[in-house]
Image 1 (cartoon, one colour):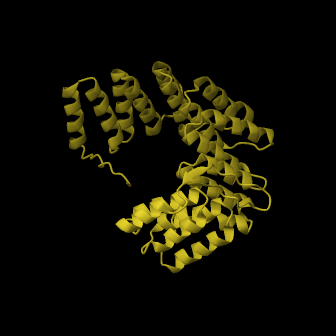
Image 2: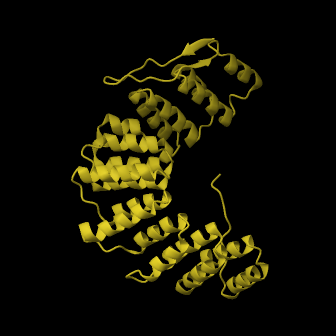
Image 3: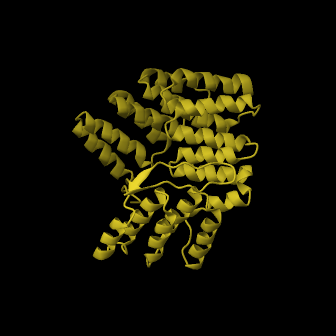
Length: 332
């Protein structure tokens, strides 16, 4: 048994990878070859990804070549391995082969290596696109890498980073980035404050949310919109302050929309407040009678507390208005 640690480095930085022990004589591969499993796409990807992560890219590429029909995930895994270890030219070559093979690249197969090689990753527009892509795939670490490559990140870049942290439940980090952005002299806009207030709501930071909403008006002269107020209601709701959330809505300077009432309804379901939930559902349905969301949420609240007659009445109301719930589905 040998220990494989990749020693490939870039011109500037040393890349260190964890030491993983795998059979040096290809024992796993030989056993799989004997059984014919390597040619199976799923098994093949798992095996060459394992070798890639252990730093044995030659073994990984050899297995990659043995897979007869490669899909997006297969190409993306191999390109990612080359990119991770600094083999940029090889990653670019593989990307070209993928296109020649007739495989259309999806977001996972974006060639960050190519963008880095030609220097486009330093451009705010390109860097923001990469940041958003990584955020959608749930990779906050890669979001930060893409952000750090941007030369002089602008408001859009900072806002994208703040929103990414907020969307993945990292409210404290999002607020830290917001403060750092202001220290850099960059003035936030309304979209930035959506990310900031969302960070507060996900973290249940109601007092911080109040502070930032007031700051919008007092320090930047911005009038909050329903999307900002919905974040406030969510922050109060997650904290269990439902009565305060209702009072907040009733005292809003603009008319609350379905998003705001729906946010309160979701909080009522979380804390099993049936009576306030009924009120929130009624308001949401009045504003948008064809939206199934409010009916379904109300029905779920009632079901959870055993009020089955009212569940049936809610479903009849839906049917009577011709509202249908779209069936759930999974991309998996």
